[in-house]
Image (cartoon, rainbow, N blue to C red; front, side, top):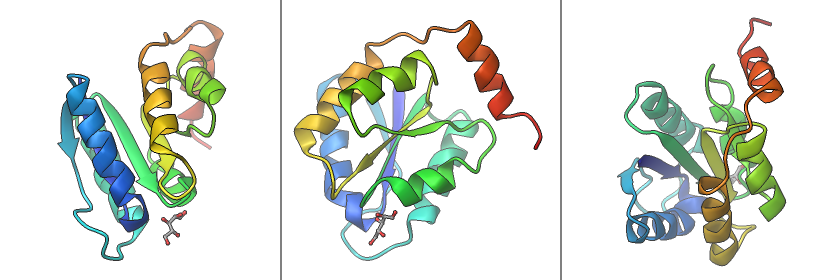
Length: 144
Ligand code: RB5
């Protein structure tokens, strides 16, 4: 599985940690930046990530900004993107079971590396339940 990872400056250190963690776990990683702690704008990196996923360059995405909020808001403006802010272990499981999220989002300034690693593992080892949840996911992309 190939996983695209991107962040702004506030998520840079966590993003680098996530890249190393995923490589150690045997996943292919597509690192879309940012490349250091210089100030950048989080929508730019949400855009790179959403486009990479929608173009089929990766199977799953991970995004990080300071809180995870701004970068989630932007990513979720793309039809077909389901970006979930994994603020607890329970939510990490539910984001797969019920939402089949295709981008996992973390807060670089609000979460520990241990919690992020645990939540990535939980998400990746949980199955989507389908059924009524698939119908609801289809409705997410229906015209407004
Ligand atoms: C950057 O300072 C910060 O605003 C950003 O990383 C994020 O937390 C926005 O939601």
